[in-house]
Amino acid sequence: MDTETPVDDLSFEDALKELERIVGRLESGDATLDESIRLYERGDRLRARCAERLDAAQARIEAIRLDAEGKPAGVRPFAAG
Image 1 (tube, rainbow, N blue to C red):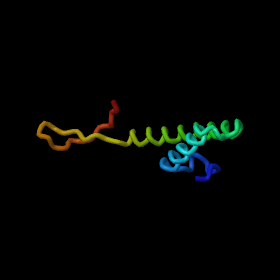
Image 2 (image 1 turned 45 degrees about the vertical axis):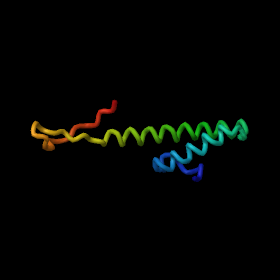
Image 3 (image 1 turned 180 degrees about the vertical axis):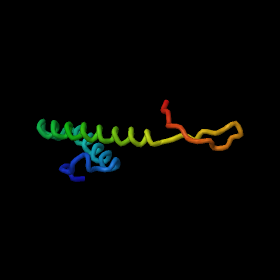
């Protein structure tokens, strides 16, 4: 993945893959201080992008309501937890 690609243009999957690579690079300890700072900043933007996409997906999930006879009677927003 090209680290110059704007974060907002990445799919969830691509952002997550790049974030995983960044974490691996930071954990290796091989990056210079300046590179580590740049990686951390991009990683934070990627993390926010992934969280945003997950929140949007969760908001679209709907649960099917059943009536007293067990037949579908409509939908209601998904409530996590």
